Image (cartoon, rainbow over all chains, first blue to last red; front, side):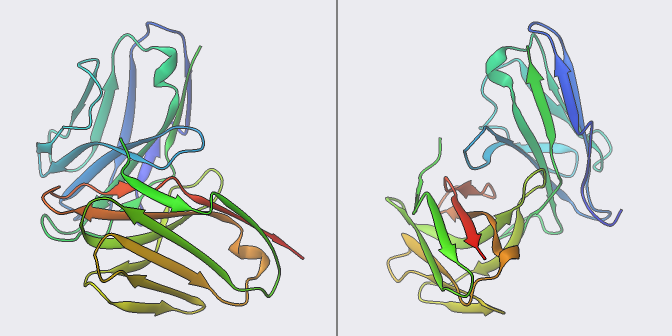
Length: 115
Length: 112
């Protein structure tokens, strides 16, 4: 597509529930990133995919967070047993190159609220 | 956690004024990027810097990659109302792979 598409744009859930957030990157972009942005803060890195594999998942806060990109295009961020502290905007970005100083194009984000 | 200190945290200026904001780090960065974020949107790239000492312009925006590779600044000349938003510096840490580290943001408000 023309830009990075993220769905849903807003998600309200209850503590303890399971959540999936979807990212559709720019067509042909091989690199895909997930970031989390808390209120009043800059985005914080979660995970980076090169193709289908997670090249760097050092930013995932704990094992409740998991992400997949099975066909090297669309990615899903999965959060199990959600907690109130998971409330944030989850941003996805993609880049056309797999190495070097990549320029990321971001989506509008999925705002997650855990009650 | 984040490793970039961005200042000022917020600015309230008059239309037509010039704006300056900066970003510092205790670590060396290979690249510096400046993004702008509007409410409900993702960050949009303004300027990318790849070499120490590099000075780059994009319209009314000018940014520089500090010689020490630990800082960068962004200037906006003759501000207009649509400059309102949050500006983030970001960079690739030496040895940090492909992930971007972001600053805490500078919120710019422009008074007509």
